[in-house]
Image 1: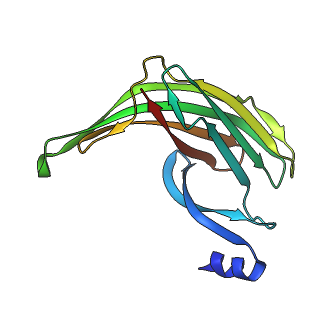
Image 2: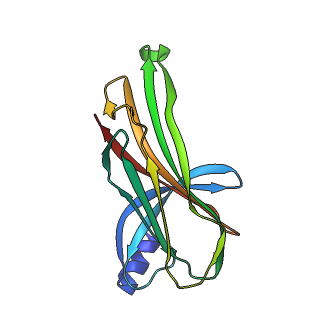
Length: 171
């Protein structure tokens, strides 16, 4: 409510909230983070692009991250991870158990450690390659295969920023 009231007073436009995974002192939690569209921004503006969103085994996925810090910061690391998992539910009712199996895990650095100046755009980019025989994405009642790109940025003195972006793998 306070954000909406302030947005109405300042003319900001609030987009639909996005959930980011925030890690503080090793603990993970999801927080709804509204994307603010407009001149005034109270938070760091972050743009994440993963292309293509639909790929085939052996394809390369390009990951681009842009942000503009409000003050000088030290980027400790920026990593993009490609993760493929199969989720299975065995049994039914109170005897149902769920399992997941890692099908693929890889990562690439977006940025070596460096300083970023206040008010200037920081642009980071890398590529990730799907395995040649990557299982296709699918979903059924009791199991599914999901692929995602996870980007994590560690900045000295700030909570880690982490966001997931799903991708679809076709046969």
